[in-house]
Image 1: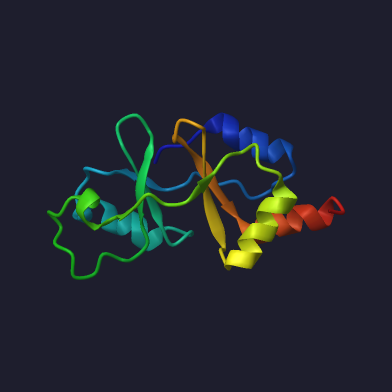
Image 2: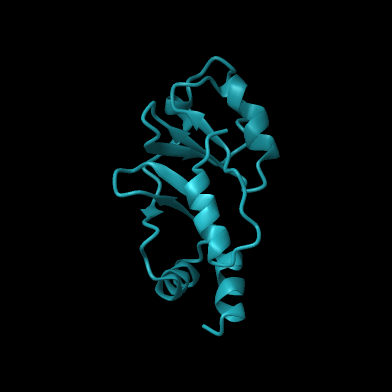
Length: 131
């Protein structure tokens, strides 16, 4: 799995206690190699990245009925919504509540994956700091 250690350290410094290595795959990987990662993901999804680490899509199903030889790029959901780490947490959580979104993919401005922000964790953080 690919991860961005600086992003994890930054989240921990902001008070987030549960910081995980987010499951990823290459968008040219085969479904058979990704199936177990997806099935065991605590987030219910795996983000597909290109060779430069740019988010290309995501897989959100268990790939049931999909042949092992199929490429991830053929079965992924393209262009997932993403946010930047510079967004104000209060406003972002409000937008997530309004849209009924439980988690959002966080990327740099160049589209490279930083991680996933879970709404429940963000709400706890805001409650703890009095926001």
